[in-house]
Image 1 (tube, rainbow, N blue to C red):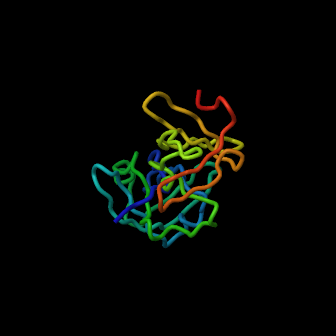
Image 2: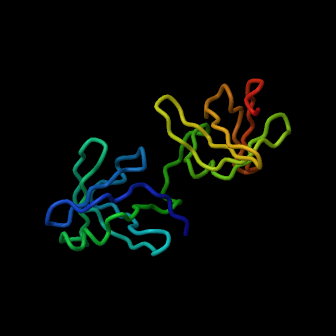
Image 3: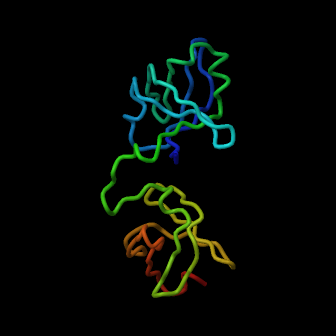
Length: 167
């Protein structure tokens, strides 16, 4: 079962088991009461918890889980991730992608392998693909001007970059 991260628990808040969470998703409804989230880390494993209450605090959320009823229990999950199963993800339009779907894809330009997507950096105007080959690392704007197509089945991103970009 593959899990996708949707949040990170920053710290315990108060005495009644609330935790401060930094969301890693654009879908705020994931954090609605009665929803279930996997809480844990890839190394230590996950357990399923039920959201009891959520309060929006701008860039963060305060969440109380039904199974976490004290500060001590909240402190035990500090630093943990919140995740959902991949099959629970919302279907995106054909020209939109979850970040994890782009990782590891080969970047090709006119039949030439330029590198592999190592990570993605969110920018204020647009995101950047960090493309690495055996020589260098490149920051490729993930916009239509450069990215001509993404073929997840083939594992390829077709690009067309201005002269000198790969120098």
